[in-house]
Amino acid sequence: PAALRIRDLRVRYGPGEPWALDGVDLDIAPGRTVAVLGPSGAGKSTLASVLFRFRDPDSGTVELGGADITAHPVDAARAAVAGVPQDPHIFASSLRENLRLARPGCGDDALWDALRRARLAHEVEAMPDGLETEVGSHGTRLSGGMRQRLALARALLAAPRVLVLDEPTAHLDPDTRDAVTADLLAAAEGYSTLLITHDLAGLDRVDEIYVLAEGAVLQHGSHADLLASDG
Ligand code: ADP
Ligand code: ADP
Image (cartoon, rainbow, N blue to C red):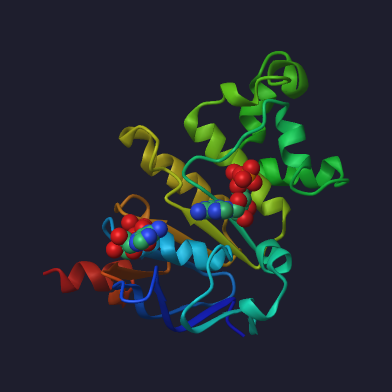
């Protein structure tokens, strides 16, 4: 089955309110990377809140690996969807501790594998005093791009069915957005990934793009398809 399959998803914030999501269909095939692109107010955060089970749909279906997310306990559904938010919470402890929180008891091999995939290992090794001492009590001193890479490494350790990158570079310097997005997408290679974004950074690297506006999918296709249709 699809890693994520959404059909006719409708969500609104109260009776009589406009639909924040108004009949959205979206699929992510296993291992593919799909972007949802849309301006402010399009419904992107609402979509994320459904995937993280902060909000249940008013109607429609959301299936993870063939099973409806609302049919599972909230914790189980959340465990299946790991995310990298705009502003991840990095604990003021070592990088290692920040990673261990994602999978308590997991061995160093898995930690280093996640670091390598998120392209953190190189920088960590380059720190003169090493991981524990240099970053020991300063998880909060990392650069914005490094925080996002760490958040991704943490998400990968959770072995999610679907990985959601929710505007992961929105708070970064515009000059670094493209490079950080590229690193995140490279590290997410092989995972079923949803990139939520309001800008074009990195979209040439995704398999499919859904353009969302006012709660509805306006266009769906490859990067090349959408460029072509823009004339
Ligand atoms: P985006 O993330 O793309 O900016 P949102 O999902 O935040 O879009 O918003 C989609 C629509 O839902 C907008 O019209 C917005 O005003 C409305 N909306 C979002 N959150 C709330 C809320 N908590 N209460 C009422 N309306 C909301
Ligand atoms: P927290 O300390 O609240 O867990 P994190 O930065 O560790 O903060 O958040 C990462 C986790 O939070 C993700 O694995 C995901 O399950 C969840 N999450 C909640 N909302 C979002 C969001 N909008 N985007 C990405 N991840 C989110």
